[in-house]
Image (cartoon, rainbow, N blue to C red):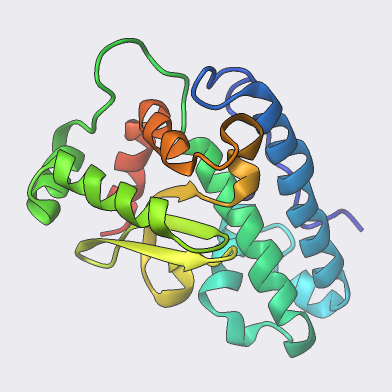
Length: 214
Ligand code: MN
């Protein structure tokens, strides 16, 4: 049987986010870490052929969303594996799309309705950026920080590979603050990684996720 889940190609090359995120980090992160989440998710799902059957032929992101938004429906013996590795697969697929090569010297900021929504929710883009950065810098252990939506917009963090979807909210923008996301280049300087990550956010993609969160 074909594998249900597969590693998506990056929408750019491993070195495309240099100098903000280095090629070595991107390669290990995508080809090793993300691949491992995909492989272990498949291994778990394959233990339950009839459950796997319910996902066959569905677009992967849709299948992942249904798994993560209703973990109670997952067979108990693979629930933790699906939560961790399914979350890892979803989060990383989302993360790659939420970045793009830095377009140049102009400030990389949201435009249009996305900018207006962020201003309305947080006072200003800078206030949002400051608050998001503070939470991402201070998150203890491994996890993610999100701009999430459930009608209104808010910042939340999740431990491990959890995603806002499992709490009934939609992810709009997310940063991976696991050490594997930055340690090769930044070592313990997480704040510097976060600061540089703002330069490579794909705000067009964020705007699409915002639209989908309504
Ligand atoms: Mn990661």
